[in-house]
Length: 273
Image (tube, rainbow, N blue to C red; front, side, top):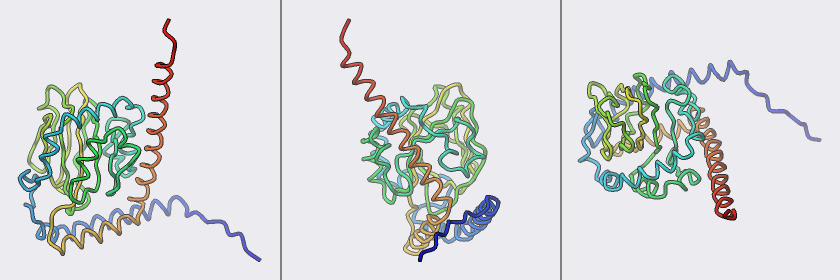
Protein backbone atom coordinates (compact mmCIF):
# COMPACT_ATOMS: atom_id res chain seq x y z
CA UNK A 1 0.00 0.00 0.00
CA UNK A 2 1.29 3.44 -0.90
CA UNK A 3 0.26 6.79 0.53
CA UNK A 4 -0.44 9.69 -1.78
CA UNK A 5 1.17 12.58 0.01
CA UNK A 6 0.63 15.98 -1.52
CA UNK A 7 3.49 18.43 -1.48
CA UNK A 8 2.75 21.10 1.08
CA UNK A 9 3.64 24.60 -0.06
CA UNK A 10 5.08 26.97 2.51
CA UNK A 11 2.87 30.01 3.14
CA UNK A 12 3.85 33.02 1.04
CA UNK A 13 4.79 35.09 4.08
CA UNK A 14 7.24 32.40 5.22
CA UNK A 15 8.88 32.27 1.78
CA UNK A 16 9.15 36.05 1.74
CA UNK A 17 10.62 36.09 5.24
CA UNK A 18 13.20 33.45 4.39
CA UNK A 19 14.15 35.31 1.23
CA UNK A 20 14.63 38.55 3.16
CA UNK A 21 16.72 36.73 5.78
CA UNK A 22 18.97 35.16 3.14
CA UNK A 23 19.33 38.45 1.30
CA UNK A 24 20.23 40.41 4.41
CA UNK A 25 22.70 37.89 5.80
CA UNK A 26 24.08 37.03 2.39
CA UNK A 27 25.06 40.66 1.89
CA UNK A 28 26.75 40.68 5.31
CA UNK A 29 28.72 37.58 4.35
CA UNK A 30 29.77 39.07 1.02
CA UNK A 31 30.92 42.26 2.73
CA UNK A 32 32.88 40.23 5.25
CA UNK A 33 34.84 38.38 2.56
CA UNK A 34 35.26 41.40 0.26
CA UNK A 35 38.43 42.54 2.06
CA UNK A 36 40.05 39.15 1.52
CA UNK A 37 38.97 39.10 -2.14
CA UNK A 38 40.44 42.57 -2.62
CA UNK A 39 43.78 41.50 -1.10
CA UNK A 40 43.77 38.35 -3.23
CA UNK A 41 43.07 40.33 -6.43
CA UNK A 42 45.66 40.26 -9.20
CA UNK A 43 44.27 43.53 -10.60
CA UNK A 44 43.82 46.84 -8.75
CA UNK A 45 41.05 46.91 -6.13
CA UNK A 46 39.66 50.19 -7.45
CA UNK A 47 36.23 51.34 -8.72
CA UNK A 48 37.43 51.26 -12.34
CA UNK A 49 40.20 49.00 -13.59
CA UNK A 50 42.39 49.84 -16.57
CA UNK A 51 41.76 47.83 -19.75
CA UNK A 52 45.46 46.96 -19.90
CA UNK A 53 44.86 44.20 -17.34
CA UNK A 54 42.49 42.29 -19.66
CA UNK A 55 43.93 41.28 -23.02
CA UNK A 56 40.62 39.77 -24.19
CA UNK A 57 38.95 43.19 -24.40
CA UNK A 58 40.61 44.01 -27.71
CA UNK A 59 38.36 41.60 -29.61
CA UNK A 60 35.28 43.50 -28.45
CA UNK A 61 36.65 46.84 -29.63
CA UNK A 62 37.78 45.38 -32.97
CA UNK A 63 34.35 43.82 -33.58
CA UNK A 64 32.08 46.34 -31.90
CA UNK A 65 30.21 47.20 -35.10
CA UNK A 66 29.35 43.54 -35.72
CA UNK A 67 28.15 43.28 -32.12
CA UNK A 68 26.09 46.45 -32.59
CA UNK A 69 24.53 45.05 -35.77
CA UNK A 70 23.48 41.89 -33.88
CA UNK A 71 22.02 44.07 -31.12
CA UNK A 72 19.93 45.82 -33.79
CA UNK A 73 18.62 42.43 -34.94
CA UNK A 74 17.57 41.75 -31.34
CA UNK A 75 15.83 45.14 -31.14
CA UNK A 76 13.52 44.10 -33.98
CA UNK A 77 11.84 41.96 -31.30
CA UNK A 78 11.87 44.66 -28.63
CA UNK A 79 8.32 43.90 -27.46
CA UNK A 80 9.52 40.44 -26.38
CA UNK A 81 12.58 41.70 -24.51
CA UNK A 82 11.82 41.56 -20.77
CA UNK A 83 12.38 44.27 -18.20
CA UNK A 84 15.28 43.47 -15.87
CA UNK A 85 12.93 42.96 -12.93
CA UNK A 86 11.00 40.36 -14.94
CA UNK A 87 14.15 38.22 -15.02
CA UNK A 88 15.45 39.05 -11.56
CA UNK A 89 12.55 40.05 -9.25
CA UNK A 90 14.97 41.39 -6.62
CA UNK A 91 15.81 44.25 -9.00
CA UNK A 92 12.35 45.79 -8.66
CA UNK A 93 13.81 48.92 -7.01
CA UNK A 94 16.14 49.57 -9.95
CA UNK A 95 14.02 48.62 -12.95
CA UNK A 96 10.50 49.94 -13.45
CA UNK A 97 8.17 48.88 -16.24
CA UNK A 98 10.04 48.50 -19.51
CA UNK A 99 12.55 51.27 -18.85
CA UNK A 100 15.51 48.92 -18.39
CA UNK A 101 15.36 45.87 -20.64
CA UNK A 102 17.84 43.02 -20.76
CA UNK A 103 18.41 40.49 -23.51
CA UNK A 104 20.52 37.79 -21.86
CA UNK A 105 23.11 35.86 -23.89
CA UNK A 106 24.87 34.02 -21.07
CA UNK A 107 23.42 33.36 -17.63
CA UNK A 108 25.34 31.92 -14.68
CA UNK A 109 28.13 30.76 -16.95
CA UNK A 110 25.83 29.02 -19.44
CA UNK A 111 25.18 30.11 -23.02
CA UNK A 112 21.50 30.65 -23.86
CA UNK A 113 21.34 28.80 -27.15
CA UNK A 114 17.95 30.12 -28.22
CA UNK A 115 18.76 33.77 -27.56
CA UNK A 116 22.21 33.59 -29.15
CA UNK A 117 20.82 32.35 -32.46
CA UNK A 118 20.43 36.06 -33.23
CA UNK A 119 23.94 36.91 -31.97
CA UNK A 120 26.45 34.28 -33.17
CA UNK A 121 29.41 36.67 -33.52
CA UNK A 122 28.83 38.27 -30.14
CA UNK A 123 28.51 34.85 -28.49
CA UNK A 124 31.71 33.65 -30.17
CA UNK A 125 33.67 36.58 -28.75
CA UNK A 126 32.10 36.25 -25.30
CA UNK A 127 33.05 32.58 -25.10
CA UNK A 128 36.71 33.65 -25.08
CA UNK A 129 36.29 35.68 -21.89
CA UNK A 130 37.93 33.77 -19.00
CA UNK A 131 35.36 32.60 -16.45
CA UNK A 132 32.45 34.49 -18.01
CA UNK A 133 29.42 34.57 -15.70
CA UNK A 134 26.71 36.68 -17.34
CA UNK A 135 26.32 38.66 -20.57
CA UNK A 136 23.43 40.69 -21.93
CA UNK A 137 22.39 43.60 -24.08
CA UNK A 138 21.34 46.29 -21.60
CA UNK A 139 18.73 48.63 -23.09
CA UNK A 140 17.97 51.86 -21.24
CA UNK A 141 14.96 53.99 -22.13
CA UNK A 142 15.21 57.75 -22.74
CA UNK A 143 15.04 59.83 -19.56
CA UNK A 144 15.51 56.89 -17.19
CA UNK A 145 17.62 56.93 -14.04
CA UNK A 146 18.87 53.78 -12.31
CA UNK A 147 19.28 54.73 -8.63
CA UNK A 148 22.48 54.23 -6.66
CA UNK A 149 23.14 50.60 -5.71
CA UNK A 150 25.94 48.12 -5.12
CA UNK A 151 26.69 44.68 -6.53
CA UNK A 152 26.83 41.41 -4.64
CA UNK A 153 30.43 40.18 -4.73
CA UNK A 154 33.91 41.59 -5.26
CA UNK A 155 34.81 38.25 -6.84
CA UNK A 156 33.21 39.39 -10.11
CA UNK A 157 34.05 42.36 -12.36
CA UNK A 158 31.72 44.05 -14.83
CA UNK A 159 32.40 45.29 -18.34
CA UNK A 160 30.46 47.73 -20.55
CA UNK A 161 30.83 48.10 -24.32
CA UNK A 162 29.03 51.05 -25.93
CA UNK A 163 26.91 50.04 -28.92
CA UNK A 164 24.02 52.44 -29.58
CA UNK A 165 24.62 55.68 -27.70
CA UNK A 166 22.61 58.93 -27.79
CA UNK A 167 24.13 61.75 -29.83
CA UNK A 168 24.28 63.88 -26.66
CA UNK A 169 26.40 61.15 -25.07
CA UNK A 170 27.68 63.23 -22.16
CA UNK A 171 24.15 63.19 -20.73
CA UNK A 172 24.12 59.39 -20.82
CA UNK A 173 26.53 58.28 -18.12
CA UNK A 174 27.40 56.05 -15.18
CA UNK A 175 28.88 57.01 -11.83
CA UNK A 176 31.06 54.41 -10.11
CA UNK A 177 32.08 55.70 -6.67
CA UNK A 178 33.34 59.22 -7.51
CA UNK A 179 34.12 58.59 -11.17
CA UNK A 180 31.64 59.50 -13.90
CA UNK A 181 31.96 57.92 -17.35
CA UNK A 182 29.87 58.69 -20.43
CA UNK A 183 29.42 55.77 -22.81
CA UNK A 184 30.88 56.08 -26.28
CA UNK A 185 30.19 53.80 -29.23
CA UNK A 186 32.94 51.21 -29.57
CA UNK A 187 34.54 52.06 -26.21
CA UNK A 188 34.85 49.52 -23.40
CA UNK A 189 35.65 49.75 -19.69
CA UNK A 190 35.74 47.53 -16.60
CA UNK A 191 34.57 48.34 -13.09
CA UNK A 192 33.91 46.77 -9.71
CA UNK A 193 30.17 47.00 -9.09
CA UNK A 194 30.52 46.52 -5.33
CA UNK A 195 31.35 50.23 -5.33
CA UNK A 196 28.19 52.33 -5.34
CA UNK A 197 27.09 53.16 -8.86
CA UNK A 198 24.14 54.76 -10.63
CA UNK A 199 23.11 55.51 -14.19
CA UNK A 200 21.42 58.40 -16.02
CA UNK A 201 20.09 58.65 -19.54
CA UNK A 202 19.14 62.32 -19.63
CA UNK A 203 18.46 62.26 -23.36
CA UNK A 204 15.49 61.52 -25.60
CA UNK A 205 17.26 58.53 -27.21
CA UNK A 206 17.66 54.88 -26.24
CA UNK A 207 21.02 53.59 -24.96
CA UNK A 208 22.22 50.05 -25.76
CA UNK A 209 25.40 48.46 -24.39
CA UNK A 210 26.85 44.98 -24.08
CA UNK A 211 27.21 44.23 -20.38
CA UNK A 212 29.10 41.19 -19.14
CA UNK A 213 30.50 39.88 -15.86
CA UNK A 214 33.55 37.69 -15.35
CA UNK A 215 35.51 36.37 -12.40
CA UNK A 216 38.03 38.77 -10.90
CA UNK A 217 41.57 37.45 -11.41
CA UNK A 218 42.65 36.35 -7.92
CA UNK A 219 45.10 34.08 -6.15
CA UNK A 220 44.17 30.47 -5.45
CA UNK A 221 42.55 31.28 -2.10
CA UNK A 222 40.33 33.97 -3.60
CA UNK A 223 39.35 31.75 -6.52
CA UNK A 224 38.38 28.86 -4.26
CA UNK A 225 36.38 31.17 -1.99
CA UNK A 226 34.59 32.72 -4.96
CA UNK A 227 33.77 29.29 -6.40
CA UNK A 228 32.33 28.16 -3.06
CA UNK A 229 30.22 31.29 -2.67
CA UNK A 230 28.85 31.01 -6.21
CA UNK A 231 27.98 27.34 -5.66
CA UNK A 232 26.10 28.22 -2.49
CA UNK A 233 24.27 31.08 -4.21
CA UNK A 234 23.03 28.73 -6.94
CA UNK A 235 21.05 26.82 -4.32
CA UNK A 236 19.00 29.88 -3.36
CA UNK A 237 15.97 31.56 -4.92
CA UNK A 238 18.27 34.37 -6.05
CA UNK A 239 19.60 31.92 -8.63
CA UNK A 240 16.64 29.61 -9.16
CA UNK A 241 14.05 32.34 -9.84
CA UNK A 242 16.07 34.19 -12.51
CA UNK A 243 17.04 30.84 -14.08
CA UNK A 244 13.38 29.88 -14.49
CA UNK A 245 12.45 33.38 -15.70
CA UNK A 246 15.26 33.26 -18.25
CA UNK A 247 13.96 29.98 -19.62
CA UNK A 248 10.46 31.46 -19.99
CA UNK A 249 11.76 34.64 -21.65
CA UNK A 250 13.94 32.64 -24.02
CA UNK A 251 10.96 30.49 -25.04
CA UNK A 252 8.87 33.59 -25.78
CA UNK A 253 11.65 35.08 -27.88
CA UNK A 254 12.12 31.83 -29.80
CA UNK A 255 8.38 31.75 -30.57
CA UNK A 256 8.52 35.35 -31.80
CA UNK A 257 11.52 34.60 -34.05
CA UNK A 258 9.81 31.53 -35.51
CA UNK A 259 6.63 33.48 -36.19
CA UNK A 260 8.60 36.26 -37.85
CA UNK A 261 10.37 33.73 -40.10
CA UNK A 262 7.02 32.20 -41.06
CA UNK A 263 5.66 35.65 -41.91
CA UNK A 264 8.69 36.39 -44.10
CA UNK A 265 8.34 33.05 -45.87
CA UNK A 266 4.63 33.69 -46.50
CA UNK A 267 5.47 37.09 -48.02
CA UNK A 268 8.16 35.64 -50.26
CA UNK A 269 5.79 32.88 -51.45
CA UNK A 270 2.90 35.24 -52.15
CA UNK A 271 2.18 35.78 -55.88
CA UNK A 272 2.99 39.15 -57.39
CA UNK A 273 0.06 41.25 -58.52
